[in-house]
Amino acid sequence: MGAYFSLRGEGEWDQTVSETMEPSIWTNVAFTPLSRTQKMLLHRGGEVQFAFPGGIRQGGDVIQVSEVVDLSLLVGFEESAGRLYSALVVHAPLDTARHTYSRAVEEVLLTAPGARPAKTTESTDKGSEMFSGSMTLDQLDKEEAPAQVTEWEYLMLYTVKEGVLAFFGHDLESCEEVVRDIAAHYGEHLPPANGASPGSGTAAGVSLAAAVKVKTAMYPIGRAPPPVGRVFTELISSDLKREFAIRCEAEEQSSCTNCVVFCLRMMLGMKMSVRGYDIRQLCESRPDLGPLVGTAAGDAWEQLWRRVRI
Image (tube, rainbow, N blue to C red; front, side):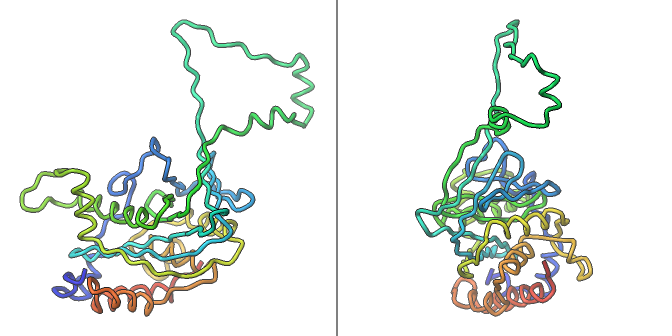
């Protein structure tokens, strides 16, 4: 990104931001509901509920956020294109208090062609049971769908057009790889350079290319005050009701969101903060980013920090 600002000014970067297409799970973000072992999509417009003791529930899926977490801001700078990516990394440092992801598993009953379905036994006193107003313990157990529960050290939240993507990982490098992967999918939908055919190259080559053109930087925010899960649920629930927009006017800010604004609101909701000069110093400490990137990214971040409210 240093090469971008060495040849262009902030005005051209502002135009690049305005023309950037919205990140979507259908175009440039890798997500499929058939592969949800390490990722979950909280759908925009959907209902998110709090699940005791610190969980975020949507449908049959539950994310239990550890009550002892360290928050960090993961920022990605795309080399030569001037794009900026932002995600919130939630680290559970204690071995005894990891994040858990409870993924609902649908049961499918397979029957042979022509076979009759098994009969279910019903109570003879069906009428009185219907109006009794109470449920037995067996009936309550049947309400809970079977689930697979896994533990994770890292939880990363990233906002896209369809909602909030939650990625789970055991190390920080896997979170950075996700941000680079998003950038790589952006590249797949841009006009191919030098006559190359779309989709050419192996997955390893795409990953390497993304690592080269996207520089990631991590800024530690600090230990989040409790209750983490409940506050996260309230903030995410409000964000899912907003419209995704790469940029918007000041008077529309309260009803719009994007990856940077989402991170800002999450930090404000947790009574924490990252200012523009923090981003500037972070970039200046990196030889591959430098002061030009720091000035542009820091000024843009500070402007949003002064405008965005929960």
